[in-house]
Image (cartoon, rainbow, N blue to C red; front, side, top):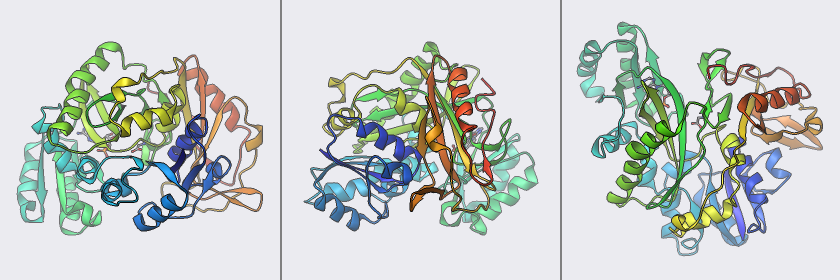
Length: 423
Ligand code: AMP
Ligand code: GLY
């Protein structure tokens, strides 16, 4: 069948890389894609939120399966658009309906869902500009650090963690009264701070059945030792060494099952990924957030470990018979290191030539912000390239990635040399 992947990051290059290996895949398209996807698929220069143009592209190219990478089109209802459009309703779209995507699109909705289905998470209250004073009073009752979350999508920047009460009150006011994160912070969730170590669990569900995919841990801060500003993610490893059987059983029983059952009970169409951000506090798992898509760069370590044909898994997801298919996971560990533009996550320049890519051996190069110009590959974003390696354990895998990074260069290339430092 012909398959379209929507998105342009390292995550989407990884989807394309796996789908290109599928015996089920005839022609592969990526929209809009990057220089990496251009080498294995046909890039189509359309926006992931322009549903009308996507429809034309699907019809014109006889596309039978669409894999949605980022959250924006999901939150805007691309799955509903496909289900309601006669030419598209049989297209196997992988991604939840708009109601499902609200688990990521609204922090308050996610918290209410967790309360409703008794899923362990931090205690919280939510506030609007009308209840600003009540919000400040609520902060006074809490112990620092204070966790403030913009309700809506804020490109991963909407969470503030503050040690000082007055600063927390001021930021609450900035969010509610001064649109710090635009419309996204017209409502703010204030949450109890959980002190522990984070990990992520990925689930593929057809709305009734589910498969738990490999765990991963990402490194969000720009600086070594988890310091400095938050980024989209500077590296990741899979599996997470401390996610042992006992912890995973608790996660499945207390979090994964109630989440999937909760979606079914609420009659939510959900055929796609649930990315559960967790924190382990005294060996007990709590949910920090839901995302309704795969993580980036977590995808770059999770998918290379899945041996089962990805198109088969997606087809079973769409047909709601995920229980009839088994999933085989590589026992090897995977690690990825993200190369970023100097200055990122603040201002940075684009258009720098990337050299040395052909010299990489024994690692996989996943492109993120790159583009082709003539026969050169240029930087085209903050996160540029993820170098993934597989080996017996994550340390050996990381060593391979770092050895290959030595061969690569572009002006002001930056990366973290301490991925996995805390394990
Ligand atoms: P989120 O966008 O919800 O994933 O939050 C971003 C980051 O803030 C998370 O990855 C955590 O590191 C941190 N965080 C969010 N909520 C909490 C919490 N209740 N306690 C401690 N850290 C948190
Ligand atoms: N790496 C975190 C995310 O994709 O949200």
